[in-house]
Amino acid sequence: MGSLLQFLKLVGQLKRVPRTGWVYRNVANPESVSDHMYRMAIMAMVTEDKALNKDRCIRLALVHDMAECIVGDIAPADNVSKEEKHRREEEAMKHLTQVLSEELRKEIYELWEEYEHQSTAEAKFVKELDQCEMILQALEYEELEKKPGRLQDFYDTTAGKFSHPEIVQLVSSINTERNTKIDAANKDRPS
Image (cartoon, rainbow, N blue to C red; front, side, top):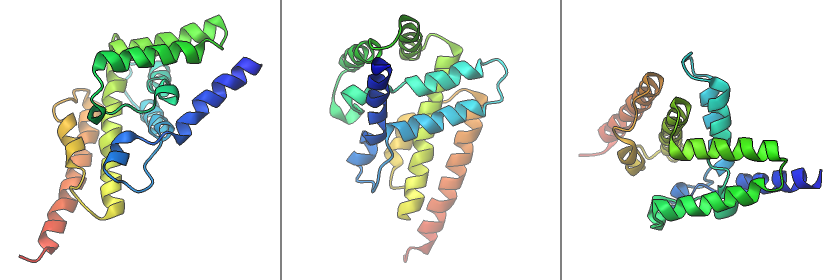
């Protein structure tokens, strides 16, 4: 049982790892990696796409950033190559899962690899959820700060990356709500 406790304590650190992109943009009280993963799991749970294995999508969402409990949240602005980021996270996943039974170690590591390699429809869907959850969070931060449009760069980095119909529809709703708020803020500004 000591090994399971060690694993759970390591994974628990995700609750204290702030999402780097928000830190770099000086967002007050930025979400943690586990906050992000939790909402992604909920988003996976509410998909209505019968062609996807919903349980697998939820598991992928819960595992996709798990290595960050060891390596931290490496953001594009950190100038770490994709290969180096993958190498660090792969090493972290091996370390993290080594304390688990062989069956659990294999399951969690293979889920992480599936996401990393984008080798299934479920992994591709969860990757889109990852990006969609980020812009939804950006919308919420703009609303909390009462600064519509402030986090535009997050929207720019995801433009054209959505293809799953449910996610395209959700992104459209996010953009519509956001654009309405930006337009209202621009009308309130003195000319």
